[in-house]
Length: 408
Image 1 (cartoon, rainbow, N blue to C red):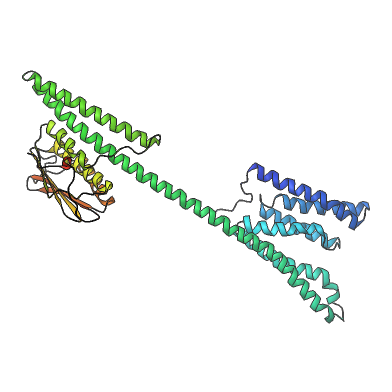
Image 2 (cartoon, rainbow, N blue to C red; image 1 turned 90 degrees about the vertical axis):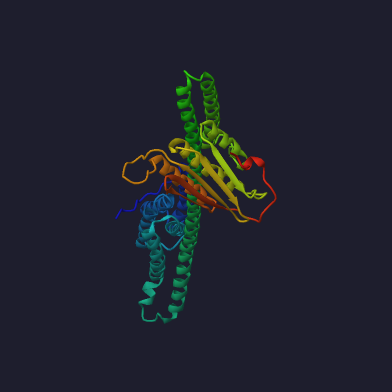
């Protein structure tokens, strides 16, 4: 078990404040105590030492409540040994008890509580001990009991105020930690979202670029015009990807606001990129989507479809079929395409490459964030993706044509 530290971490101005208060307290108490004790050399020396002890306890009450409590007890014992009555200098005891409850460790916290009870008993015994031992002491019992209750109440009041402050400080610290944890959670979600967007943007654009580059390489000698068109498509895809990456990096640096996100109206451009890569995309939408689809759902649909088309470009071996079935409360999305040669020769159906498995995880996460679900796998020799997205609200009347009219 780790031993608790004796000293607390304080800011320089806090230490300076406590030392200044203790110094002023000592300067005020010293003449008062010297006046009561007399100015004889022996009495003056002991009075100065007592005042220094109490002032020292006051100076370190926040820096080290345990040392402050020990110094206060030594000063109080010295005061009783010198047969000095309670005086103004004892005010420091209340500040020390407050500090033990407010700033001390658990052990010091309960030592302060015990000190308040024991201190009240010791004070009462010191003031009435000799009289109570005499024969005729019954008349002093009520007064002694009143002093005991008053002293205990005063000392415990100081300790209780410190305990309340301790509870308040702990609540503030807990609230700060909760807010920090919430900020970290939000930042982590934002980083995850940006990472998914980066994966989708770069993966799709690179898939288009690779497909076009391969086509241009084969057509360079026989069909120069086709090679030029392929290079133009590569340039367009690369510029679009670069712009998207810059926006995402700007979000990551928090130097710009949230970048515009693709919506259903941008799907036609996505299909055009895939067709430019040499694959036919057949899109079937039935019926037309509702008039109002939340932006988060639109973004999720776009990114899931983008990842599915990217995988088809990389690993597919034929045309792509996209079906979007809009219902009043949800959207069903199907994407299918035949796959190429097996990536792992296990004697069975082709298995998905590792980047496809990572893409499926990202698609599932995107769908889950809006309450949807994604399933993907081999059915015969075709790769099938099924996704469902909930749509709050009832059916509407129409959507922009770019959301996907039937294409051949």
